[in-house]
Every structure is written in C-alpha cells, then in structure tokens.
Amino acid sequence: MAFFDNPVIPGFSPDPSICRAGDDYYVATSSFEYVPGVPLWHSRDLVHWRLIGHALGRPSQLELHETVPASCGVYAPTLRYHGGRFWMITTVVGETGTVLVTADDPAGPWSDPVPVGVPGIDPDLAWDEEGNCWCVFSDGGIRGVRIDPVTGGLLGEQVALWSGSGLQYPEGPHLYRIGDWWYLLLSEGGTERGHAMSVARARSLTGPYEPHPDNPVLSHRSTDHPVQNTGHGDLVEAGDGTWWMVLLGTRPRGDTPKFHGMGRETFLVPVRWEDGWPLPGPLELRSPAPELPPHPWPAESGLDDFDSPTPAPCWVTLRRQDPDAVRLGERPGHLVLHARADSLDRPGALFVGRRQRDPDCVARTRVEAAGPDTGGIVVRLDEAHHYRVEVTGEGAVRAVARIGPLTGTVAERALPPGPVTLRIDVTTAVDLPPTVTVRGADPDADALAAGLRIGAPDTLRLGYETADGSFEVLAELDGRYLTTEVAGGFTGRVIGMYATHGAPAFDWFELRPA
Image (tube, rainbow, N blue to C red):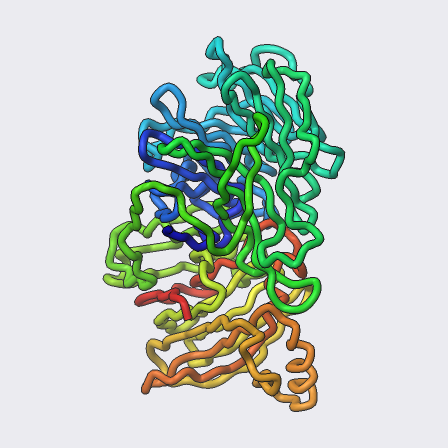
C-alpha cells in the first residue's frame, strides 16, 4: 500500500477549494494581502501538487490600497469546473468585495474580475438542475441567491439555507448536488482551535436542510492531535470513484498554548459515505494514498539566481505589483529593489518573498548595497511582527526584531564594502540545548531570554556568512512572536528580500529545508 504525507500543500495555503477536470485536479487557496492573488495548484494524483499560477495574477485584476491591513485582501476562494470552463469566486475584503473570474485553462489567462453584488465572505458557486447559477455565502448565516455568472447580477432574493449546529462563525460554505440530495458543507467554531466541519442535506437546493445527527463531522478541538484548527474543507470525487476532502489545518509546536508560524496549510483526507452522508477523516500526518496512478512533479529548486525575465510563480509581494520598484534585468542576473518606504513597519514597504514550507529551513541571499542602500532578508508575519538581517551602503550588517509596538536592533557589526551573504536559519526549538543564548550585550538578560524560550515552537538564527562559508550568528530569537497565536491574523510566515533605502541588488536567493 502506498502512503502520502500531510500536509499536501505545506506552508501558508489556507481555505483550499478543489475541482476536477478529467484526470486533473486543481486547488485554489487564499492570499490575503499578498499579490498575485489566489494561488492555483495542479495535481494528477491528489498527493503531489505544483504551483501553476494565480487566478488574480495581473495588476488590472487585483491591486490593494497600501492602507489595507494585514490579513485583509483576498479571502477564501471557490474554484469550480463547469460547462468546460473554470470559475473562481472570492471576496476582496477592504476593496472590491466579491468578484468572479473565468478561464479556459487554470494556468491562465483569467478574465478581468466581474463584481458580484453579495455581502459577506466565502462565496461558493453551484448550478442547479435547470442550469441556474447560485452563489452561496456567509453573512452572519449561510445564504444563497441566483446570479448571472456572466454579469454578476443578482436574479432574485436571498434565501436563508442553514447556519450550522450553533457554533460561532458559520462560514466557508460549499454546496453540492450528489445523487438525489443537495449537501451543504460548512465550517464553524472559528478558524482557531475550535474549528470544525459540519454537513446538512436537503432534497431541494433551497431547503429545508437536515443536519447530520453527529455534527461536527470533523474536528480536532480539545485533542492532542498534531494537526489542529481543522476545517474549511471542500469535496471532490476522484477518477476511481472514491471521495476526498481538502481542508486547512495547522501544526502547532512548543508548549501550551502551542504556536504555528507557517500558517494554515492544506491537508487531504478520505471521505466515506454512511447512510447517504459524506464523513471525512481520519486526518493523519501519514495516510494511505489514493489509488490513482502516482504522478510526482519534477523537484523544484529552492535557489533563484534571477536570470529569468519574469519572477517565478512562487514570488509574492505586498498589496500591489510594482515593476518600477521590483526590477529583473536592470542589472543582469540580479533582482534590484528600489525602496518605496523607509521601514517594513508601515504601508508601502517593498518586500518580495515566498512562503515558508518547511518547519526547519535555511534562507540565504547574496546582496550588495552601496551609498544610501539598505536592504536584506526578512521572515515576515505582518508589519508588526518580523525578524530581519540587513546591510547598509556604509558597511554595517545588523539583526533587527519587530515585535508588536517595539522595534530594536539586536546586534550590529561592521563589514568591508561589497556583496555579503545574509542568512536566517529556522530550527525546531525542542532540538536545541537549554543553554542556547541570545547574542546580545547583557548576559543576565540573555540567560533569562533563553529560559523563556524553552517552550517556543522554533528558534530563528539571524546572521551572515563569512568568506569561508561559515555562519556568523548575530542573534537567536524566539519564534513564537512570529506566530498567529501571538500576532493574530490569518496568514503565515513569508521569507524574502526587502529594501528600505536606495536600490540594493540581490544576486540570488535560496530557501531550502534545513
């Protein structure tokens, strides 16, 4: 028997929605304040996934104002294949509201967004027996309305459907016609530790809906399971007639309340049918694989040497794409970042990054700063929570931490002019000896910080590489401050390059498992 490892899409990839077209499977995930928006993933066996692009990939499709807060922007999408076309609907919170795009090929191009005049979040698409398109959404409860999918216009009054078993925040609805029943799958309990999946069914799309007697049908709340926050799932029938669900979950680590830094990830679970009900699970980190022909994709390199004329699909930036500030080709074989704001702590900051996909990883970049230039490498959760290592044109390298309202330079060294390799290692904290200390100026404070860090999920080492390739560590910082449990929000860590003054040039960037 073949097995697979969960999560199937590791790293910040929440709110997965799945569809099947022949022997191909596609997943769309949320992107929040990062652009391009709505990553699209492709698989042929439900286990191996590759990033093929974004549904909101062009600036004309998605541009967020600089003042849109972190964890706003693009919320949970729904991806469907109907009538030979792909359909994606989502809500851009803080901007345009609910929008719908279509494509003949999920790799693009996708159409310009069509506004859909429904309130709330988490829109879903379903077509009834007469061919009418319905949009189902969360707005205090779960509602549905017929729409014209071409114009986005509403074709009738909203209908209250079903709002779960009574837990808070019924959301993420997905509606399916399977056999003689309409099934309404939704999440409730909040996307934190109380997250749960519930299901109801009806003979008619508009109800009345009969809830499963044992709702929620999937939840890991109040357990010691290594995967928590489970919910926001979507069903798919595989080519062999089996049923599966993709859903989000987290992998918290450290001591209570435990912390997750990589965000909500995409997991895969089998679905069994009992008495006409779809029941998902169990969800395990290692599970029997679908009985589909295995189809791994070629391994992707974690190293980008910036020789391509356009960025790889894995690269994202904040709120808007800006080719005038992010330049490939200005200096051959380099990415040159032209600073727009003098701090990562405020709107307008220039950052280009990729999602952390491995709990233990190494991020490195070769950067050259001259004159007024300042830039470097950063592990970012939001404007108020990030750790970074930067160089200046004056020959200084420093480690800087932003935690809530406080920003501080942890350590600083002088370096000779020229390119320097900056590095951040992320290491599971439980593997570290209890004597690990922060490289600071106060030994007593360092000892106390090391003791407080015993229960941390991981440790981040910030520094640079010397001429012989050894790692000169400037600081070792507690990873819990770059987690949702501390910072709040809905995203995960993104690691990349930034500029706060001038135009530093980056020769290459590498993100690999430790």
